[in-house]
Amino acid sequence: MANVTVIGAQWGDEGKGKIVDWLASRADAVVRFQGGHNAGHTLVVGDQVYKLSLLPSGIVTGTLSIIGNGVVLDPWALKAEIEKLTAQGVEIDADNFAIADNCPLILPLHRDLDGLREQAAGAGKIGTTGRGIGPAYEDKVGRRAIRVCDLAHLDALDSQLDRLCAHHDALRAGFGQPPVDREALINELREIAPYVLQFAQPVWKRLNQVRKAGARILFEGAQGVLLDVDHGTYPFVTSSNTVSGTAASGSGLGPSSTGFVLGIVKAYTTRVGSGPFPTELEDEVGQRLGERGHEFGTVTGRKRRCGWFDAVLVRQSCAISGVTGIALTKVDVLDGMEKVKICTGYRLRGKVLDYFPSHAADQAEVEPIYEEMDGWAGTTAGARSWADLPAQAIKYIQRVQELIETPVALVSTSPEREDTILVRDPFVD
Image (cartoon, rainbow, N blue to C red; front, side, top):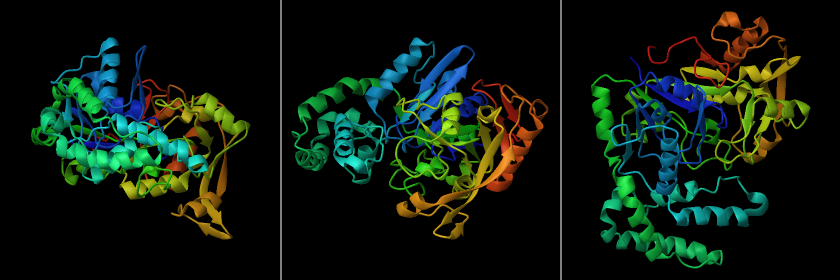
């Protein structure tokens, strides 16, 4: 039985929550391996709607859920999210939830810096969520982070605080802000420490035990490949690597354990915040896609920009992340459209490109080359087999997989867990 790694193959918001929830019900462990509480997943189980930002999706089904070392953890956001889910009847304890003890923390000073930078950037804003994700990753790489394991040794934190505050005090002074209040920070950490430490452990060890026992592990990515700090639309990206390879380094398991790579792909394209978007539709068609797809960010509530499906971007994402198969979501949003378009290439200053260039100026200048197809009058909503789909919808799906050079493994036809067409089982393949 294979393990499965789930990633977004666009700019995030592809519908990973529903797919991960569907897979989590068949997994023995679910692991978050990068990002922070800037990620948002909405799960619909029966008449209950669960909104997750930091916790792995498996927590709702009682599956062992783990936050890996590649994640940056806001302990206060974690506590609030657990309390909210507990109020919805979800049981969370040290038996079904664990946090890597070498996971770096997001502190109030990180949130402060995130906000100050965006406010000062003016037209140069990159559209961060303001939750301190980027500054926390910077401190991790700069070797001045406070980690989960440090919460058990707060009396020995002086030298780390010296390095941390020396860095942040200089930045804060540049923004006209007072130095970090070290005493207040330590007091906040003392208060939250017992809550976080009850879940802390060397999760690499636990995961290796799970793997050796032959259990199925689901690696849950956040955001999407086009937001990867190396491979995305830089600088309009997140602060971590969102590609499938990060599942190994961000969890403590080797690359041979990551298994089937499932790329989640929306049947059209959306993105939140600033940055290039070749197929963006700023007309009634784009508005219709947004309204029918309920395109608002789970975490931020921000309206998503909408456009036609971009096969060039998704093909590139699948190649970079070694995607084995895709899960195509929100096909039902295209129901009833007379015509649908797919971007098959770009024109850049008279030259035709079959890839998305790296430089921001070139990215902003490319013009999409479209292939137009007939739409379908019938509905795909709630379909659970190919026979339930209109013939033209099947043609659209087949054309998508041809253009992205990656087969379809699943088709999601509504937010409901069971409204899924299984073409290829990731856990068996």
